[in-house]
Image 1 (cartoon, helix red, strand yellow):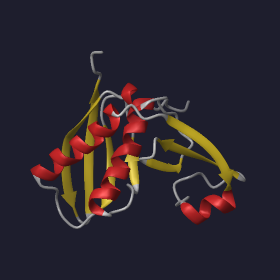
Image 2 (cartoon, one colour):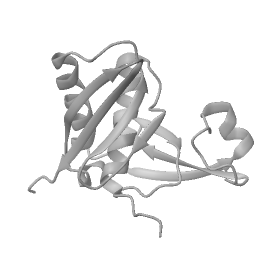
Image 3 (cartoon, helix red, strand yellow):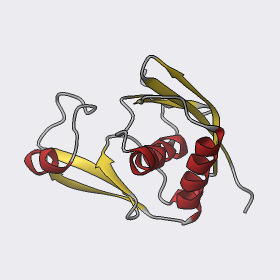
Length: 148
């Protein structure tokens, strides 16, 4: 039985990835483990994060969440998607049409997972811990639901 991915955690992963790309030009995570209570993303990196950088990442991600951006999808041809996106993390048998998930004008990437409809549904993003070992930065994060 395939485990169900939490839509909020998965959408938060996309926002975290784009934030890391924008802040550090490190590329999206090369490995992720998304769970309901706590998730983690691994990045190719050259050092540990400072406390200030951790706080800045949290702020940037939470700013995007609070901006109440629509999370939408579109389908484009595999040929077209290869020009603009890295398809390595998609299954081999993905087919000819590739689903692109967009988070407002902040992020767009190929994905076959479930997502929220709006970033405000995600809740508050918090980095639980960050560690660095042998060229890999691991960020563990969790979400708490906001009272509306």
